Amino acid sequence: MEKLKILVVDDESRMRKLVKDFLVKNNYEVLEAEDGARALDLFFEENDIALVILDVMMPKMDGWQVCREIREYSKVPIIMLTAKGDEKDELLGFELGVDEYISKPFSPKILVARVEAILRRTNQVNADELLEAGGIQIDKAAHSVTVDGQPVELSYKEFELLTYFVENKGIALSREKILNSVWNYDYFGDARTIDTHVKKLRSKMGAKGDLIKTIWGMGYKFEEQP
Image (cartoon, rainbow, N blue to C red; front, top):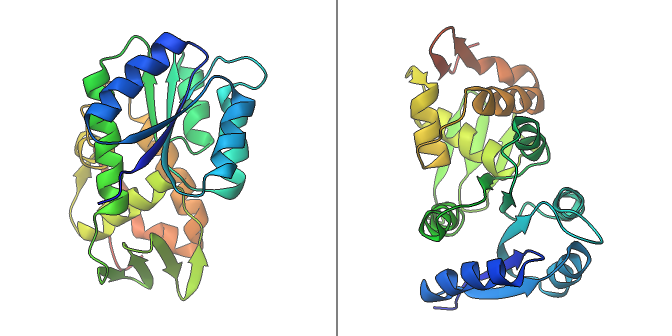
């Protein structure tokens, strides 16, 4: 089986080597870029990058700008690395469609685990796996969604969140359970991560956004009838 290709972008060569060594050890092919401009060049030269690991603070072009540029053309999963623990940075990252957000210093093993969790979801689904509920059709293999027959553009995390809701329709889901299932790790943040994604998801779904019910003080529930 061909190795999945990961682009690691960081201006610190020591950090790139650390991340690369762990990923190579886990059978990934790794491309490196030392700044944002080089990262974009590589990303558009290679048409089969499976995931991007992107540092925020870099010369020439910072991680946010690189993320914006990539998101104009691609929904490739993006993991942001930052030395800051600033909540505003984290919320900005999610607004830009970042899939994971990891503060330095971090454990390379944890980073690899999150990479694997994302790639498992984007590459190991049954080709014929379709979900339908309330006029919403989800094609897990094609990573596509239609609402009443009309295609809806969702980010990676929005897609995973909607899929989780539909797979658990009629069940009250706590925020903690959603974080652990959709983000696939114990997330030590607050509920705003989920709430931000749900708000954007509802907006993109139009009237069908009402199918995602808020359960005050607990979380959310997807119901087929509004």
